[in-house]
Length: 125
Image 1 (cartoon, rainbow, N blue to C red):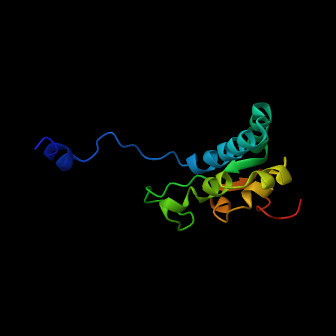
Image 2: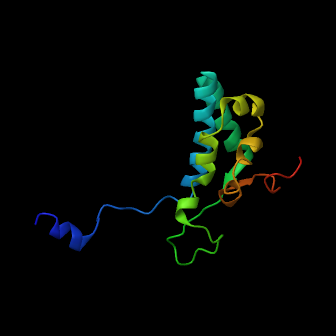
């Protein structure tokens, strides 16, 4: 019976997800795979900095009734970072510092990340 008040009141400490969290997770996924595959923490940090200089996060707040962004499921928001974390080390080595190649590993990256120069992901530079 100790669970009854919790069930009736719900989880009172739940907070909404920050709208840029899926994008930030993609940057951290690139850093994580870089460190895991190369052992080079400085290179991983440099790639996060390059990500922040080159890309902007698209705010995705599916809990906001006024949200007019893409119709995507909440579980798909993290498809970008999941795909990057699953990249084999051979691809991480091949992609090197070309962050766009990491981001093209999942179509969901285009829902949460945009280039600072206004070009869509995947367009030749």
